[in-house]
Amino acid sequence: MSNPPLGIAIATRDRSDRLAVTLRHLLALPERPPVVVADNASTDDTRARLARDFPEVRVLALPSNRGALARTHAVRALDTPYVAFSDDDSWWAPGALARAVEHFEAHPRLGLLSARTLVGPEETPDPLNALLARSPLGPAPDLPGTQVLGFLACAAVVRRAAYLDAGGFHHLLFFGGEETLLAYDLATRGWGVAHCPDVTAHHHPAPSPRHERPARDRRNEVLTAWLRRPVPHALARTRRLAAEARHEAPARRALRETVTRLPAALYARSPLPPHLERAARLLDETHGRQGAIP
Image (cartoon, rainbow, N blue to C red; front, side, top):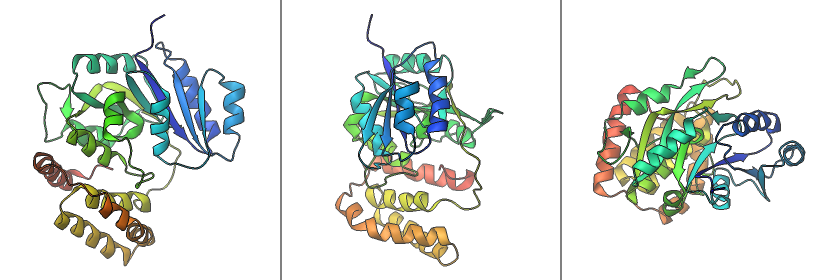
C-alpha cells in the first residue's frame, strides 16, 4: 500500500470530550489520513481516553504546555508531504483533504492553503471567509485561489517542507493570533499562501462571550509588528494598545505581557522584505475598512 499523501496534526490540552468528537469525524473520512495528537500536558483524562478509544491515533505526550508550538511537534512526527491542522474542536469535510492535495500537487510553490470554514451545527460561514476571498492581493498565476497573508489555523493545510522551512509557529507568541506571523515567514521564504474556498473545514467552538478581544491576541498582534514590521508601524500598534489599556483590563494584561516579551522580540526581529511589506500595508488598509483578520 502506498504511503498516504497527507496527515493530520492536532494540538490539544484538557478537552478530551471535544477531542473525541473531532477524532470520530476525522477517522471516518474516506481518505483515512494518519492522525497525530500533540497533547500539551493535559491534566484531564485525555491521554487515557486516547489510548482506550483511539489506539490508531499517535499521541505525543508533551511534558509541558507548548501552545501552538505543539503543532510543530506533530508535523515533525508525520512523514507525509502535506499536513492538515485540526484543533480539538474542528474537522475536515469529506473530500476536502483530497482536494487540498490536488491543489498542492498542481502548484509546487503553494506552501499553505487556507480553507473555507463553516461554524457550528448550523454551518454558518466564518466571517473570515469573506475577508480572505476579497484579499486585495488577488490571484497569482502559479497559485490556486486568492493570495493572502492570514488564515485560521484549524482550517489550514501546509506543505510539510514549507512549514519546516519557515520554522513553523513562533515560540514567542505561544498561542492566539499566531497565524499572521507564519504567513509572513512562509511568504518571505518564497512560499505561496492562498485561500481556496473549494476546501472546507468545520469548526465547533465552545460558546463563549466575546465582548472584548482576548489579551493574548492583542499581545501577539503587537509582538508580530515588532518582529516583522517597520518600527513606526510597531510603535503605532503599541501606542494603540497602551491607550486601550487605560480603559480595558484585557488590554492592560496584553500590554504587561507585551513589555515582558519585547526584548526577545527585538532580538529576533527580521523585517519583511519590501515587496511583502507593501502587501502587508495594503492588507492593513483594506482590513481597517472591512474589519481586521483575527
